[in-house]
Image 1 (tube, rainbow, N blue to C red):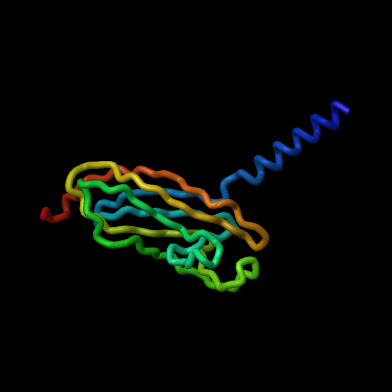
Image 2 (cartoon, rainbow, N blue to C red):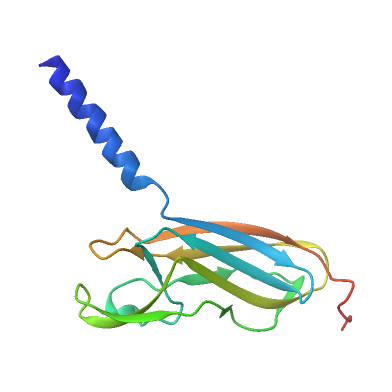
Length: 153
């Protein structure tokens, strides 16, 4: 009886650990010229990440990137994604959805007035062809400084 209980606990913990493994690896960087924040992800095979412009009423949570207000920088544009999205009909949601497979790259041009730390949050949802993981929000911080190549305003 005790062996059966220990086996059950062990396999329960093992299955929890396997499902909690990250299916995506994020990186957050600053590029001095052109001055921009860059966010990238490597997505495990078989999984996909939804686009920033996906209609949330369809069902899956679109990827969202929010920066905290910071007086020491000026945002010059919204985030732009350089990864080509795929579109397909997902029966689970009863709609056509746009998503990224394998990788994701986005950038936002900024003007940095003085060295500072850009803080923000990224919310995303991952799915494969059978299931979706719950949406997850991760905070991030990126050190930025004025580029010597920028012209002061």
